[in-house]
Length: 187
Image (cartoon, rainbow, N blue to C red; front, side):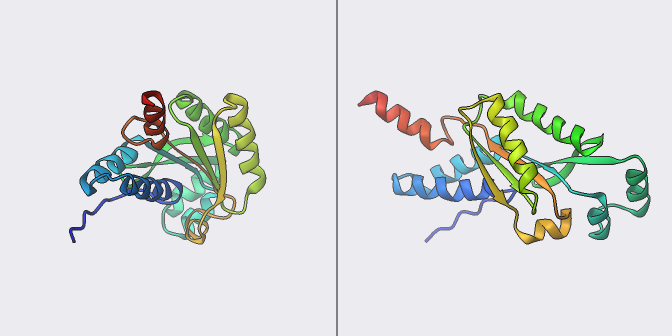
């Protein structure tokens, strides 16, 4: 048996989608290389943004230095993080949680229409997750939303209250629905 390795460069919702779609494609008769190519496309088209609950947990986990933590606390800075090539990078530094959440919603607004599903993740912060869901539905009622809780390791590194959004831009290569639509039009 040949094994093909894939670096998902992310976790949570996108990796679940890679697995589910990979199983679907395998059952549909795709070769291992075809499945790998499709999953690579998911990785390229995936967006994953995180708003850590507090800088203190990032400091305790060693992700922020003491001076970065102190300056951030004094200026009430909140970080908007994103996955980039398997690494978490700072997308923006914004004053106040409310403005950081608004920036995240502006980011997703730019992508609306390119994806069908969005996953809202939280670390014991369901109220804010529901607020994000409501805002996304107001932008585009046809977008399917899902709320899931983060695994405990996120809480350990990012802190209780952390929020995240993830979506995968739809392409003909990575979408199960696109295949079904093509089949329906042929039949």
